[in-house]
Image (cartoon, rainbow, N blue to C red; front, side, top):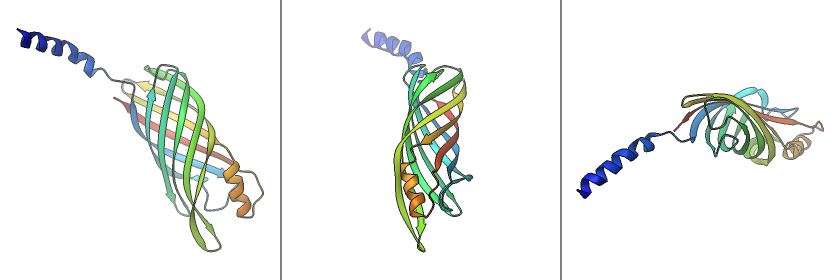
Length: 177
């Protein structure tokens, strides 16, 4: 009898186990522009790939982690960014819009005096995005404007005194589990 009761309870709880969570994993394409900048920095014409994981805690708050890479001609970089998402529609089907702070760390191959060395760029930024969720599939377009401190220093080291405007843009397609 206990075995039948146990099996009945397990069977009744199985539909709850098959309900999807709001955890998403996806891929994307990025466009990165640090303009004006030296030729070895991203210039907006180069594209790369992005892997992402996202978890909306509710319909208004969420977090996202992205890993990206760009290797196109003279530009060679990889990095990651973590984002806090504050908005609407983050955990339900339909439209979604969000904004919030972001923090990044990336490694860019810089070229000076005929040598190529990796340099770390990191700092805060502010991201903005919008998208649409249909059943378990979500499509997003997002961009992050980044703190210019490291990029300004790199421009000065390369002989340019123009302030850069670093913007990382992404198009994501993700699946909700």
